[in-house]
Length: 302
Ligand code: ASP
Image (cartoon, rainbow, N blue to C red):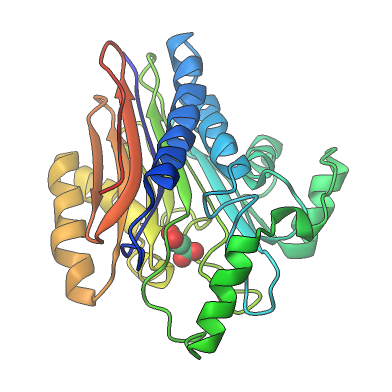
C-alpha cells in the first residue's frame, strides 16, 4: 500500500479569480507531478524516488514557485532552495540560494547521496553541482514575464519588506511506499521581493521538510519565517513521537492553533507511517493533490 501527496503552495486568494483556463493548467501541472510520483510507487519504487520525481515535474512547470517560474528577489534574480529527506535513516540533503541548477531537488538528492554534508548554499552548492555533473543554466532560464510583473507591482506598492502573504507557489511532496518507507521533499524560490541571500523554511530540515519512518513525512508552505521559528515540520513529528498524537491531531494543533496564534499563515502536507494523508492550510487556498493505492487521485485548489 502506498500514499503520495503533493502541494504547489498555499497563499492568499489571487486578487482576480483564476481564469478557468489557468485553473485547468494548475490542475494539469499537479496531475502530471502526482502521476510521475505514483508511477514510481506503483512499481514498488521507493518513497525517496517518488518525491524527487514529483517535485522535479513541479520545478519544470513555470506556473509554480520553484525552478523555472520561481518568484524574484528584489534585485530581479531567482534564488532557489530545496531539500529532500529519507525517513528510513534520517539522511537528508538541502541546498539554498542557488541560481544555476535547473532542478534544485535533484541537487539536494545528490547532497543526500554524497553523505558528507547535509546543507550546501550559494557558490559552494553550485561548485558541488558542477563537480557532480550538473550542467549550469543561466539565471534567465528561471525568469518568467509573470514573475517580473509581480515584482514590478510589488515595488510600486513599496511593500518589499512588508510582505506577509506569500503568493501561491512553493512545491513539495511526501510519500509512503509499499515497504513502509517515508520521504519528503520541498522546493521553492522563496517569497517575492525577498532580500538576496534570504533563506526560508523550505530547505531547512525540520522547518519546511522532515521525514522519519517512525512518525511522518512533512512538507510545508507559507510564510517561511514562521515555519522556521516553529520548526514546523519537526514539531508535527515530535508531537507524534513524544506526545503520542495521531497525525491528524498533530497537524490540527499546528494549523488551527499554533500558527494562527502567532499570526502565521500557510499550510502543509503530511503522510504517516500507516499511509494516512493530511493536506491542511489556514490560508484561503492551497494547490494540492493526493493519491493512495487502489483509490482515485484528488486534486484541489480551494
Ligand atoms: N515557505 C516558502 C518560503 O518562505 C514560501 C512559500 O511556501 O510560498 O520560502
